[in-house]
Amino acid sequence: MSETVCRLIGEASKGGIVAVCDHASNRVPEGIELGVSAATMEKHIAWDIGAAGVCERLARRHGIPALLSDISRLVIDMHREEESDALIPINSDGILIPGNIGANREARLKEYHRPYHEALEAWFDAVEPGLILSIHSFTPELESKPDEERPWEIGLLYNEDDRAAQHAIRLFGELGVTVGDNEPYSGKQLNATMNRHAEAKGRPYCAIEIRNDLISTETGQARWAAIIADVAGRVKLALDTFE
Image (cartoon, rainbow, N blue to C red; front, top):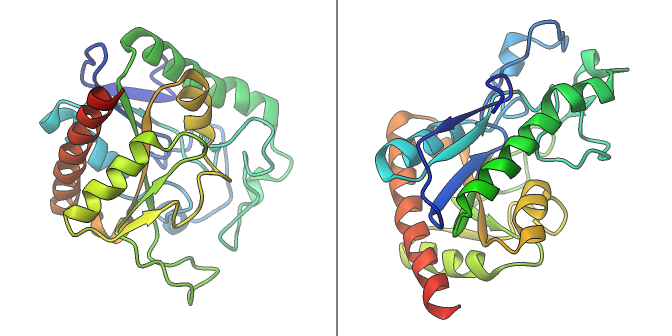
């Protein structure tokens, strides 16, 4: 596995629960100039704030190993198909990314995107997971749409295969969590990594979006990792029982 595009925390057991995080890092590799400020690189457009911390705690405290991308999505978005117009964003949430204008698309695919997905594929093939958690975070509001309410604490996204998501939606709701069913956006429009590595292979998954103000601190990350680990264990039990 390439250390330059991803990192693996923990050791998976066959048929167990694993986690992945496409937007874990805001790292820009040496030699790439995006032309944005350091402050912009701390914003949500550069990475999923808090998601890496949740994954690290899932792995280290709850026995759910995690594979995390180590490249900012402003360099190349691991959670997009190769042909997507948004693969190398020129504009994100109203912010111009001038260094991506005229970027060498094929070079970034070869250097970062393909090795990441090859690492995911090899890992999943080796461990044959019984449940995949795809961990993301979302902003309480978009900078480009500040008046658009996003009240959910957590969202479950899915495309065609909702067997794990429906269990999770019910279980989170029973815990008193405000849950989005294919919110804050629909997995039927954007589900690239899970479409490729889960749905295409018949692997059950939960694509989980956590509102990032809830996981901006270590305390919040620990709390939500514990909640997610509990729900994930019960989702897997339900899948194992009814399938």
